[in-house]
Length: 483
Ligand SMILES: Cc1cc2nc3c(=O)[nH]c(=O)nc-3n(C[C@H](O)[C@H](O)[C@H](O)COP(=O)(O)OP(=O)(O)OC[C@H]3O[C@@H](n4cnc5c(N)ncnc54)[C@H](O)[C@@H]3O)c2cc1C
Image (cartoon, protein in one colour):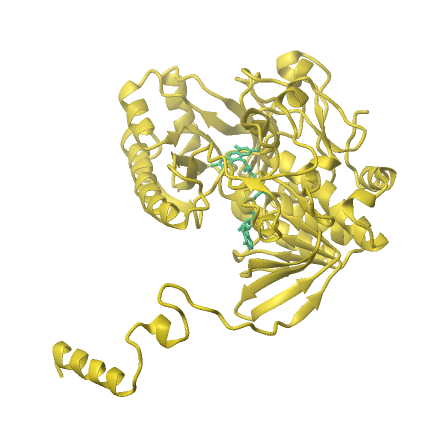
């Protein structure tokens, strides 16, 4: 039977059965929409539900579970880690900017984030807090990671803490009762389920849970999106020699690499003396700062693209996914052609989807301002302190000190039992250029996870938690405070 005959028979069969030709109408829809039948969902009950096992979510879930909360962690990918393993170059920053300001050296983020680094060091997956040799008015240390070992270490630490880790599971909705979230609706190959809990933390980067719960948010679309490629089969020392020979300005740090200390682990070159190459890099949105913890591997070469619309737009993102993959292939080609030691380089790793620097910005009880950051303000309810700004040396925290992140900045406005954590807080772009960084997101995770567990145990809402209890629990768990 040829195609025309097949179509004719199908048409006749449809007409004979009295069916509408529009499949949506045939199934009970109204032409351009479909009324999905209600379904009865199985319920699972927890004390705390954390949505998103990324940079902040991993720490939040470990913190909650260590406080004794029965904790569920929902992650759409097959592993924990998030953008810290997929987007950036190094973890900024565990320290204050002591070198630039010639002040006391202080490790200002400790606790669970530092435990992750300790574990990574043991398996050869981290440079350590490698001191910056140049450009230390930008950061005093460079903490580079092996992205794959990070995922494994995070997974193991979650398991050891007793977290129920639901990977390959997508958060698709929220069950809301007045000002409280009762449940998170998830979907996986196990079907559609409702995860009930007393406290919830949104660590999805996109603010999905907060949006489903009806919280207010904006979509500033103020950053480019990115995918980053790991380039294998390179010679880091030859690459470094090339940078030196061409007097390329940039960032340099030495730390642990392939089991040896005092090796180049961060090499950042603005290719100013190689204008043709610099232009080629600009054409594909390629950033030239990279890190490594292996002799033959460049961990992150970023290719950026500015979308005309928010990265919550599925169709615009689909186009960008293709364009950025083309750019990553061109980036590897540039290295192969122009950079000694990279002649036989290949694309060893890409992120499974493009990375965002900001999706939704969720409205919380307090919005951290740029003066809060730059003037190093501290608060009477802070959950951590932080001392890094991505726009240094243009914008730096006063005197190489720190500012505090208030607990209120994590409490989602209008919702009794929901915290926001990570890149989704802080509306001011310049302030966000500090709070969005990995180490800050991790610290926020410890604050949010601890608070959520304490609230669940006391059957109270986020605003009824006595700050003294939270502060004591954080201090006992190794979190550093200055005041
Ligand atoms: C290209 C790029 C470069 C960067 N460079 C640096 C750098 O050099 N140094 C630095 O310190 N910071 C850097 N940052 C910033 C930093 O990496 C991020 O801001 C930070 O990691 C965000 O952490 P997060 O916890 O908010 O989100 P993420 O780490 O992105 O975690 C979100 C998690 O939620 C999951 N998720 C999302 N939606 C759902 C859903 N509906 N259901 C289930 N799971 C879901 C995601 O899969 C992900 O695992 C960079 C960011 C980007 C994008």
